[in-house]
Length: 552
Image 1 (tube, rainbow, N blue to C red):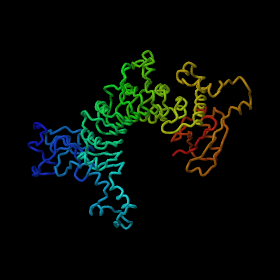
Image 2: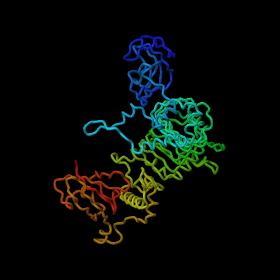
Image 3: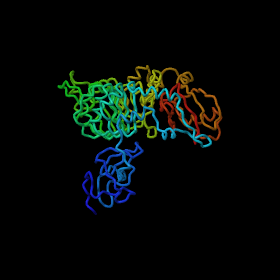
Image 4: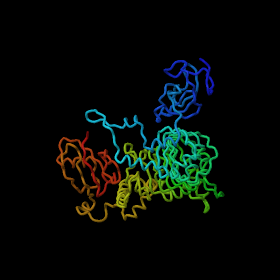
C-alpha cells in the first residue's frame, strides 16, 4: 500500500478527479478547510479536505478520502468524499452580491426564460408575478429593508463591511441558512456593520470550533446555530459577546455534555447568560439529566426545549440528594433551581418512570410540558393516557401542545380518582400513596367519598345512582349513518360486554368491533383493547364518549 501523503496546499502527485484524466491543466485555487459548493448548485456544500478533495455535507460522495490505496484525508463518512476538478466548485459569493441577486429584481434573459409553467398541452407559459414591478421597486430601496433571507445562495463572506452597512443600514432580521460562512470573524464583522441586527440565523453553516475573542454584539437578541457543529465550549466563549441574547437555538449539534458548567456559585454575584429566556437543545445527544441541571440557575430562562434527546430520567434537584443541590445545602441565599422555567419540552426521549412525571410538580412555575413519544405515555406498552397525566401534573395548563381547559382538568382528576379507587381493593393503601401522591388531595378537592357497598341506600335506587352516562358514536365505514346514543351503564361493565351491547344498540351484524375512548385535547382516541377490563378500571366516567369502529 502506498504511503499517505500529507495534505499540502498543492499535493504532489495530485489524485485525478473521478472521471478526469491524470492532468487537466487546472490550477487549484482552493485551500484546505475552505467551504465550497458545487458549481451551479449552492445547496450542495462541502469542505475542502485536500486540494481538491471535498467532504460533502450531504454524505453523497464516492469514498472516505482514500484513493487507490493511499489516504489523502479523513472524511466524516465512508462515502462522503470525492476528488473534483476546481472548475466544478465555487468558493461562493459575498452577502452583498447575494442581497443584490435576491432583492434587486433584475433578471437576465436566461433567468426570465426559466420562469414558466407547463400548460395542460405541455406548452411553456411565462409566469408574471402579481404586483411584480411594485414589489421590485420597493425592494430596490435597500435602506428600508428590515428582513432579508439569502438561504442556500452560497454566501461565504459578507464583503466590505462599510458597503454592507451602506446597503442595508436598517436590517433587523437576517437568514443565512445553508451557506458557506465558516469564520466567527465574518460574523462579528457582519454584526458590527449592521448595528440594528437583532435576529441572525446561521443554520447549516459549518463554523469553525475555535471562537476567538469577539467584540460585543449588543443588539443580537435571537441567535440560531442549528446544525453548525458548535461545541458547548464555543457557546461559553460566545456568551461574553452576547449581553442581550434572549433566544439561543442549538439544535442538531451532537451536544452531549455542558462543560464548563453554567451553575452559579452561591458566593458569586456573576450571572451567566443573564438575559437568556429560551434555550433550544433539541435533537442532540444528551442522555444524563445531570448535564441539564447545569442550566438550573439561568435565572431568566423561561423555555427549555429538549425534544429528541436520550433522557431516561428527570428530577428536580432539591428533591434529589446526589446532585449537591439537596435540601440540606439549600439556604435563603441559594438560587432556586429553574425558578422562572415555564415551558419544558421533553418529547421523543426515553422517559419511562412515574417519578420523572411527578417530579415536574416541583418546578416552581412550570405550566407547559411535552411528554409525547416517550415510553411512559406509549399506549402500546401500557403508558399513561392524557387524563392521568393531567391529574398527576397539578399546574400544567398546556400538555403536548394542547391547552388543558378547567373543565378537562376537573373531569380528568375525578376520572383519575375513580380509577385509583377501583384498584384500592387489591393494593395496600400505603402503596397507593406512594404510587399516586395526589390521590388524597384530589379526592378531598372534589369531595369524592370512599365507596362502601354496605351503607346507604340499596336496591334499584342505589344501582341507578351508581350508573355512568356514556355517549356511543358509530364511526365504522360499513355501519352506515347512525345517530349517537347516550346510555347509562354500570361502572363494572367490561369492554367486551360493551361491544356486545353496541351490537344490539346499533343492530350491527357480522361486524367485529373495536372501541375507542375519545379524550378532549388528545390528537388520537385511545384504543380499548382489553375485553376483560371494567370501564371504571379504565377511568371512564359519566360524560365519556366512546367511538364504535370495526376491525380492518
